[in-house]
Image 1: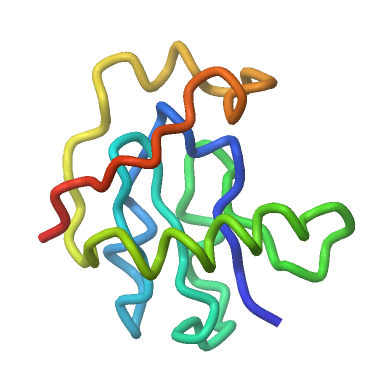
Image 2: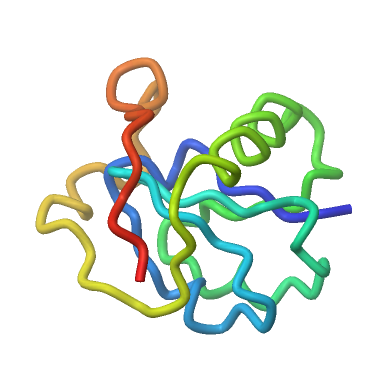
Length: 112
């Protein structure tokens, strides 16, 4: 098992989770974070820290797509280990459906 970041993170990109990760397995895209599944130790401390409820165990049904997204982009995006300011419009995007198709960006973030 590993944890994955899901669509709920897109355009919200809260970084509370990276601050508590003991193995620094988060990677930053332009408008979301991902978890490197080979680095995640399945401790689960990140899941309750996410205000957008975007982090889920990959054992939940229907998360295969998100495991693929996390795996692919964790190899391409820079590592992030420190909390940053959330985007100013983050609250406006909380709970919105269909964010992957509308807003997902393949571009990397800045990392640490």
